[in-house]
Image 1: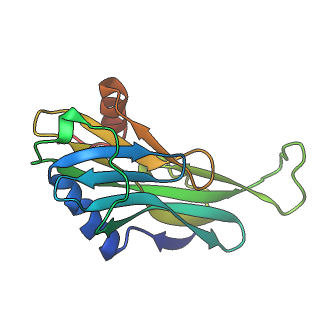
Image 2 (image 1 turned 180 degrees about the horizontal axis):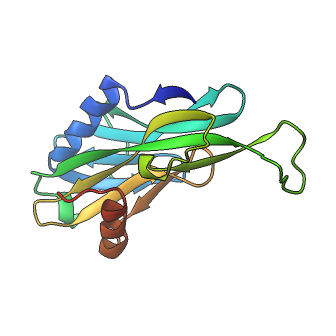
Length: 176
């Protein structure tokens, strides 16, 4: 197995730490989420892409701080007081050989690729890329927001449903 790493940068981690503070609002788009902090700064969250051996693309969370947001965003009551916690999660994307069976449309020598968490990694994976594919912001009141790489390339998904956030945390083995 050949392994690569495409995880959050130090700059991204520093930007995400800002989400611990008090929020003014949030603006959610398909490819970018902007959290406006009470101090006027903004944290822009998006997705970075890396080509892995020409077999598949791997995606990671990217974040940066901007001094002037240019947007106000929609208020998010759960996070306005600050004292939030931020937890990053590791994901993996890997390729599998096609084996003796070939799916319709697959050519000889092609491979399939999958994404998931490290516990889902197959023993037969040929190429693996370890990523930072998600994070959860938890408020002091116990409410959470999950942001993760989306199913569409380059997209980001935001989930605030408590049951879905809890299911994600349990699937990833987080017990807080």
